[in-house]
Amino acid sequence: RCKESFLTHDQRCRMNEDTGADYLTPWQISKCVDGGGVGVIDSSRCNNFAAGDVVISFNWPWQTHAVMTGSDLQKVDPQLVDGHLSYFLGAVGITGLTALLGIREKGHITKGANHTMVVSGAAGACGSIAGQIGRLDGCVRVVGICGSDQKCKAIVEDLGFSTAINYHLEDVPTKLKESCPDGIDVYFDNVGGAISDAVIAQMNNGSHIILCGQISQYNKDVPYPPPLSEETQKNLQSKNITRERFTVLNYMSKADAALCELSQWIKSGRIKVLETVVNGIENMGDAFCSMMKGGNIGKQIIKISH
Image 1 (cartoon, rainbow, N blue to C red):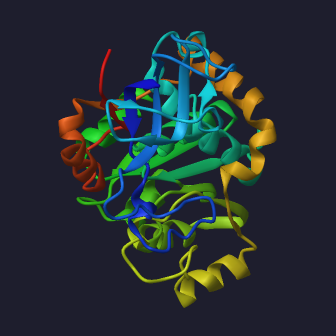
Image 2 (tube, rainbow, N blue to C red; image 1 turned 60 degrees about the horizontal axis):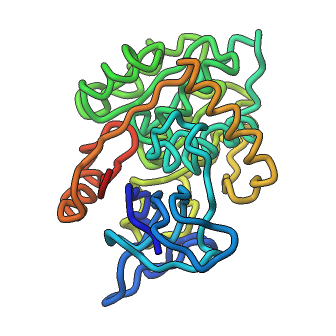
């Protein structure tokens, strides 16, 4: 029996009957919504867990208390996050793993090669971590694309991005040319659509796309990953640009080492974590809608209890 502490809402695809992913099932009408959560065990009949243990789950119901099976839970060590339990849902959890392993497996960043990296959705939970990892792994220039001046300011001043582009107010192709004078070598793609078309048009020969998400396309009845425009597809082929779907669950054998690395970076201050925290289960719907409109900076978190 678990007491809820935090819930996270990386769940847009589960609002579709076809989630586009084998590992995601759609939410069922009349059933309790679930998602990623971290909390504390009140009592246990399972030998692997005891009262007071901190646990996480990808299938945590959106409620203040829940009875769950042990196979749905994973015990975590609060020392990994210096007691910031919500980090297990983001920077030292599946989100951080997606950023780190995505870059390592698909980005092919080489220190000393003067690589330029662009991140779309750069002020979101995954993008904000990915940009910092790109810098730490050796990129000389990291450019973020965001949806507000506030977000642009946050990723540059707080997270160390080289520069940021507000796609609502600025011409993305023009700003990319100014911000990436040597072209683009690595693109961490969270959004797809017109923004990604603009980035791919300026990518160098032999560059790499980390296909993490396509949030701009999820309301359309298209397969995942969504098909590209004819011009963009020609760019990929003529420049030998790699664009392979990335699913972090395929690399979980590397998860423990990656989580330790993320933890060390955060504890040392080399990676900074941004969160938007809303208090109270009664505000979960509003927080979810705000996130889908771009209202969050960093990970959107609902804090249920202390």
